[in-house]
Length: 534
Image 1 (tube, rainbow, N blue to C red):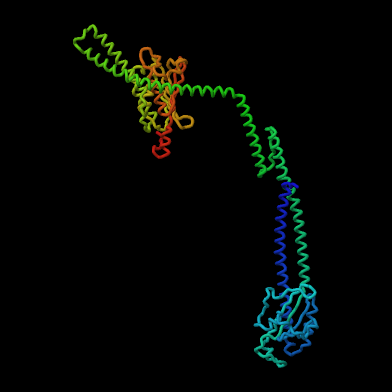
Image 2: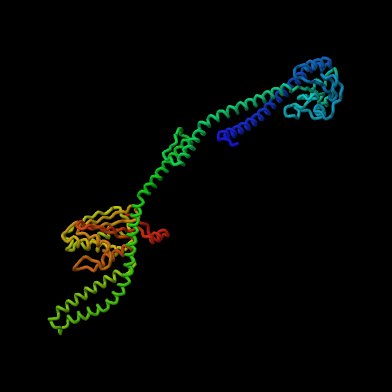
C-alpha cells in the first residue's frame, strides 16, 4: 500500500515520539522507584533507630518482656511485614513471626554479616536495605540495624557485656513494597495513556497542518506542472505563503514565464528565420569577399614583387644613362627636351616600381606601446600645411580615455597620411575633415573614424578601392596607397571599412585591437608590459 507524504511524516514523527516517551518513562520510573526505595529505607532506618533508643532503658534493666511487647506493637503497623531481634551469636531472640524465635540464622544472611564484621553505621546496600521477594512472592525490603555495645551497656548492674564486644545484636525489619509497586504501576499506566493521547493529538495536528501547509500546495504544484506539460504556458500557481512552498511556487511561476518567453522567441525566430538566413548569408558573402580580397592581394603581391625586381634594374640603367646623356655637351639641343621627357617618365616608372615593392614587401611591424591620438597628431602635422588643405576645416574629436595600443607608429602614420591625402583630393573645393577616436563597444579594441565631405565614391567602386592599381585619379596616383594601408591594418590584427555617398562624403573606419592575439599570449606569460591609460 502506498503511503501519502502526510502519513509518512506523521508515522515517522510518531515513532520518534514513542521512542522518546518510552525512554522518558523508563528513566522516570527507574528514578521514581529508586526514590521510593530510598524513602522506605530512610523511614525504616528511623523507625529502627527509634525502637533501639526507646527500648534502651528496658535493655539496661533486662526487661525483655517489655522490649518484646514494644517490638510486637511496632510490627502491627501498616507496611511492617516482620520485626525480629537477633543476638550477637546469630540466634533469633524475638520475632513477630513466633515460629522463628530461637532459630539460629544462616551465616550467609546480611544480619549475620553485620554481627561478624567490623561495626558500621550503614549496610553495604545502596539504599540501606535489601530488596527481594518473600516466600509468598511479594516484593519486600529487609533492613538490618546493628545494636552497639555502648559504655552504659558494658557497666550495667543487671548484666555484663565485655567492653571488647562491639555488636550486641541486630534489629531486623522487613517492610512491604506492595504500595510502592501499586503506585509505580499506576504511574506507568498514566504515562502509557498520556503517550497514546499525545500520539492521537500529534497525528491529528500534523495531519491538519501538513494538509494545509504541504499537501494542498504540492497538489497545486503538480496540477501546474501537468498544465505546463500539456502546453498551457498561461498557467500560474497561487502564492499563499512566504515559506519554502511559497518560494517554490514563485520559482515555478518564473520558470513558466521563462518557458513562455523562450517559446515566443522560438516562434519569432521561426517567423524571421528567412530574414536571419538572408542576413547571415550577406555576412558570409562579405567575409568571403574579404577573404578573396586578402588571397588576391597576397597572390598579387608575390607576382608584383618578382616583376618589380625584374623591371627595377633596367629602369635604373635607363635613368643613369639618360641623365649622363642629358648632361653631355655633345647632345643636340633639339633632343634635350625629348631626353628630359624620357628621364621624367623613367622616374615615374621608378616611383611605380617602389610602390609595387612597398605593396609586396611583408615587413614585420616594429610594435611598441603608443598613443593613437599622438600618431594622428603627427600625421596631421605632416600634411595640414600642404596647399590642398588650405580650404579644409579639420575637426578633432579625440576620446580622453584612450588606452595605449601595441602597434608600429610609423606604419600607422603611413596609413593615416594616405587616407588624409585621399580626403583632401576629394575636397578640392574645400570642406570639413572630421577625425574621431573612441573605444569599441566591448572595450577590447579602439576605433578611428576619418570622415570627409568630399565628392564621395560611386557604389560600384566601393568594393575595388583596396585593389592594387585601382584609382580614380586621372593625372596622378598609382592605386597602391589604400592597398598598402589595407595590408598594414591587417598585419596589426585590425580591419578597415569604408562608407561613402556620392556628393555627401566618405568615412573610413579603422578598428585596432588594444592587445593583439600574440601580445595577449605574451602578456599571460609575463613578457608584455601592462597596458596603461594615456
